[in-house]
Length: 117
Image: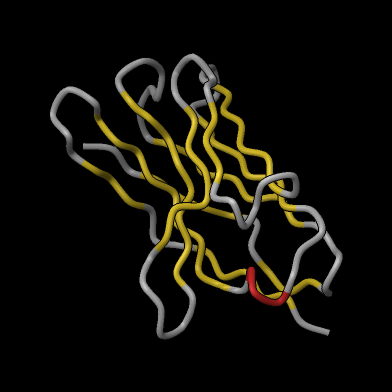
């Protein structure tokens, strides 16, 4: 069982930056692909970015060049640096741990990000 706790959300003006963190209750090294997802009101949850144990990253087209995902395996922590934020980035952001061998997914409780002037 993996427990994930996100932090760092909040209200920011368009063009601003926020940094999200996700603390995991267990080692997040090789067994897991880690990722950030988001869900805006009235929309389905969508992928934002993922990162493998080898630090290979994947980004949604909508955030490429603005967001950076990273992981610190020693601290069992996942990060998302968000720059040049837009109102359409407003959503609840969820941390995800995907166990590759079993296919099981673990989710955090989510953190609200609001981009508004």
